[in-house]
Length: 64
Length: 502
Image (tube, rainbow over all chains, first blue to last red; front, side, top):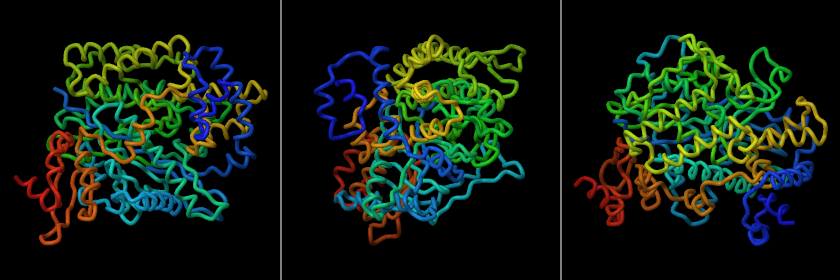
């Protein structure tokens, strides 16, 4: 569970819990990989629902 | 001896209005910034925010080479749009069709990271403030990227104070070599390409957001025919002594390590240029093509032809610059380049180059193009997607979404160099070791008497006399050490001006 807590950095409500639940440890390749798996589980929930429309509608004016 | 490298970053953010009718990005940007300024007012802080920007000394058409060539288009200064000065010394404004935030002047790369992060937090607070004003189904969303994937680009510019006496040709030679090759750690990554004549089949994923948009080697423009070396010559300081190198080639970074290295290494390279300390010229045969070749080559093995008949990879050039920097620091010290922070820059420079050479994947969380690519590759693997799948393009954009609940970057556990308290205080307090201190503290204390502000002056209205302009032509004066006591002693702006006159 600790690992799952750690990747959900965006939720302020969980910030305290996260510190308590995550022992200080150096990130190993294994851990990075399992973090990534957790993240991929999440991405489908977070990702804009219609990717194609979203990408099409993201239009900016040139700047600078 | 190289002069102290005063530094700053200006970031233009992408902006989208969601849930509304036809959206106008200029109106959306104004609303975003005004919502933030009102929210800060309402918190009861002394408000800085209504102090307008003073355009008296703005001259973006000045060209470092002397007269601008016929046909080049100087940028116009738009004075009618929202344009505010913050108590941290930053400028927050609408530029073209984007919200833009310029950090206050900083003295080292770590301070730049702190104020760049504070700028992100200001953008996040602005989105929140806008949400409280807009109808519930609408929101403004801010992206920290540099391209919409359709050929429209907006910049993240860096600024470095340089000695006017340094020959511009020497700057062009060595800065170009650095700008082309530093991309291997400054790139923020991009799915596909926006270069003319190329498609996503040619370039499925590339290292930078910006390389596609550079068409010239040297020039004044920033919005079309973009040059690798921009010659805008507007020092915002004593023009007899200084020039400001306005660097437009960089990507906006979310990884703090990338911002740290981007600015830290460049400050060192520019100091070495001033001291004529770089012992090898890396002049590329075709700089514009080299810029793209580096960005398109994920193997980092591309060999770039040099005019002297030899050739080098981006990594080789970076190693040579680092070697040169080591000798420079040994012989000349770090005074001009941020003190001990420069030593951290050198250590990180080395470790990042080593990792790029042996196993770039190790740099997830430090370098944006690697961080982004890692999650895109994993998602591709899991769902068996080709690079042309719209979900990958969507993830690319969403990596840069600054909403904490939507940002992909925020979920990737990137390494932090500054802690949250330092970032929070940097939203309101100026750096103490540049003139930004004087600007910011005056705004905190006397905002109702300041009628205008800009980089190199403050204009006071103390009621009785004509308006009083206080020039700040030396970026490293007006620090806490110089004026801290004086500001404490002054109870009124009139007293301050009197003490300054003495």
